[in-house]
Length: 476
Image (cartoon, rainbow, N blue to C red; front, side, top):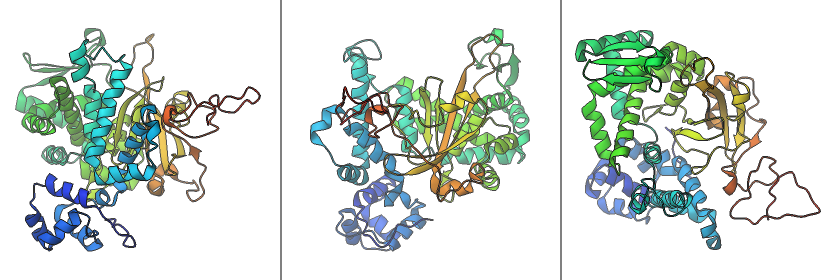
């Protein structure tokens, strides 16, 4: 397990205090667990003593904690989110330096997240005209500024997209139904019938024109559209089985998350049931083991588990079990116009939280090469480098003559992990070809970008009638 460097002092009292409170421990109890005095622990929490390597190791061993959550590596996304918020023109006169942003995100991550949520509400209100809310009136504007999908995405990211209870349920089902992942679909179908008297039927698309899965409670039938491929049907069966078998667990997780309204609660439950379905189809340990042995070759992994490309990519972002971690991937799904509809990450997400992906990222080029995997090494504004790959997918099979509904999936991880990936074989990872990218154009400060769509909001436009620049929006 990685340990923070010992050549610098770590004053991380706020994080230590937050971990203790999350665990429901008193200072006296945690001090006993760590083998220190309560007064010493109090000094640590008040940043009057640095956190030593020995204490870090004891925390990791005693509470099964990833040391990165203390050392700051895991909170890079919080710094980026807060920096994005403070780049808004309303804060321009403050000129908050990067190190202050980092201090807030590091020492008060809850406050940082609260500010990001507040800004998101303001941003939604502003885009809605400042008057009409999501529910069509002033009350809706006040209560519904953060949409259910945004709330659920933020909640999943706060959990680092990992839910140990659901992982355990997925592994338990795999143990009950047999270890062969190829036989999962049949075993799950039989379990639905035997335990819940639910039969699975595939219906012609004309009978389910706008629906791909429907559970009829009265006839006890799970009806699937013929437009779903094999992986889609298996996932639908796993979803229904998870909902019926573990209703109580899913409801308890929703209650613990405390969503703000019924719509958000319903979407959260569906999202957790989807997570459980993936955990059942691709149990954690066998899935991670195969990923490591194949170099995270998505095509090989998906054929072994009878899953789809997108399903496997999504599953890659959940490999955060403290005792058996995989590579911390991030994933984004966009449509042909670049609108994101999925954002998941096992760690920090290096792209804009309030906009789409940089046009220089090859997730957009995937539409020009359908079905092909495109690789790329990118560098963000802070100098961090990531290895990424992208490919198009189809959610359902479109009837002839209907507009194709292709989407693009982009997946990536820090460059230091690229040597473990099959997609990086043959590449010079020491001196790679790198594409410099940024967040949304309105907050990106890269100069000379020919694909810039707007000047950054915290810089003035600098137009010279005698000079034409590469970028259509030169700025000061």
